[in-house]
Length: 153
Image (cartoon, rainbow, N blue to C red; front, side, top):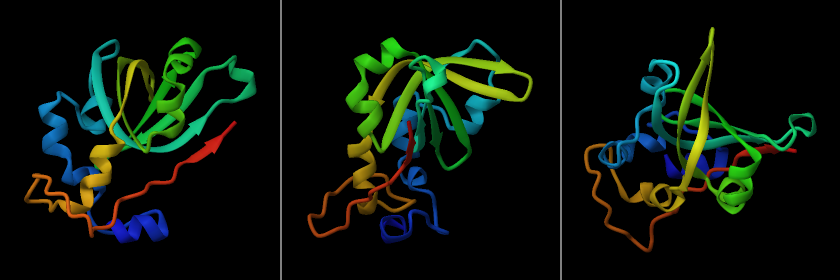
């Protein structure tokens, strides 16, 4: 799976977050599918691979992210003040945890970010895990997972 992502940018095997789900649950991080089904206005935390970063000129500094975990995608809105305070994390993180308020309008669901954490180091260790074993024994010879997102400005 790690080689697939590093060479092709995707895998037909298990999603990388499958191997990290237990660790994420222990931190109170919900799967995206569960978050998407939560009530409007609920405060929650999700984590995922950063698929897309988008900061259109017409959005007055607002950044839009798409996060992906093994269950679904989550659209995230980051207001300019939060982006400025977390610029390096937002632009450089391969895997982010976002705490915020769920916003639903019809079929459109967004998470309005209030806190952002970089979980890229946890993701980098996924090559040392199996879906049955979530313990991390770092093997210096193993390949580190690298996820490339698409960025639009």
